[in-house]
Length: 322
Image (cartoon, rainbow, N blue to C red; front, side, top):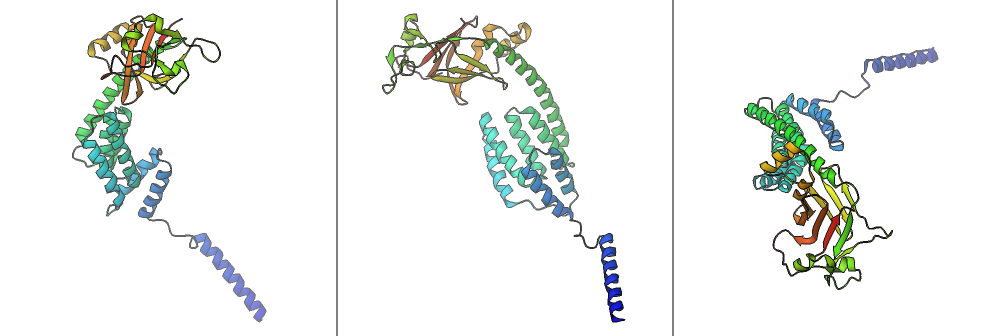
């Protein structure tokens, strides 16, 4: 009897376990909204481009009472970004502020104020589409914001600016496309600018007077015995000039209204190539001149736009169509 009694108990215990399991009592209790928010934020930090998850976080946080605590690190990033934004004058300043705001947002992606400030920074960078998205997220995160009407008007203005910007960039690319094809390159060679180099291409240069004498210009022959060089038209509305000893970037900057109107009316013409701004870096533009027919380009690879000495020998390159 004892054996049968024990067998019956074991079977009863097993049945009870099955019943408990089927009812879900063996599983962990469902996570609360704060634990879910924490997990969502961790997931977003791994994939910041997941906008669907970002909106899910914002909407979840709106329904949590009291509101989620904002990490202390957010205040540091916010202070840094706000200071940079208030004193910003150039696009690089706005970009630096935007980076700091983005870091703060990754820590507390439900805070509407951060999206608004990021929108201001991105607008300063002229990233109009991104700024529109920032302000839209602000309106989601702060549905009762007193400035919601002004923000929606700002979004409307940004959409208009973005449409005009897209049209302008398309016209710009049409101008830059005129640079496609083969170019030959000459370098001005009179006196040494680098006593440690044996290569005349890198070592020699010309003063202002010397570069105006055609006899001082030598044709560059590459390693394959060919006298051609390359101009690469990039996808980001710029061109890359690949010339021995002189790799610079060019972009057609915002034109005066008169020139812009002319470009819109007549379309891309070689004459507009003279308006390309060539630079070694974002903050270091160099001297350049383009013939009106767009067939001869001269760049002073190390000659600044202002403050140069006409008696100093710079590395000039002259590109021309064969």
